[in-house]
Length: 136
Image (cartoon, rainbow, N blue to C red):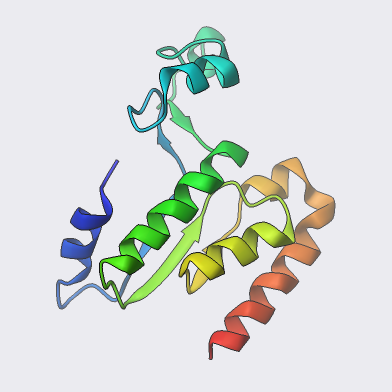
């Protein structure tokens, strides 16, 4: 997982037009207390996908990711990052889009909700479009 400081350094490169953050974070990432990993998945070191024999890269996505992405975006903007920033991860409701825009995102990437709450997709997309238009 990359820090906001490292992302700012990458983003300052003249060939970088903007950044996209986050779809997933590595399973067991030390930025989340072990207690939380165990609460969410029953383990702090083995992904539920691996316990089912699915050979994939382990990562946390969905609802638990949203708060982390909001904090990360706020931290990056506080460092003075001024280029375009697309943020996503854990968007399940229209207010989740508002939280990301309030944190400093210029646009959002939407995935979790389309699987977990497809009936909200229209409202989420409408909120994102409205906020994007207001940014100009």
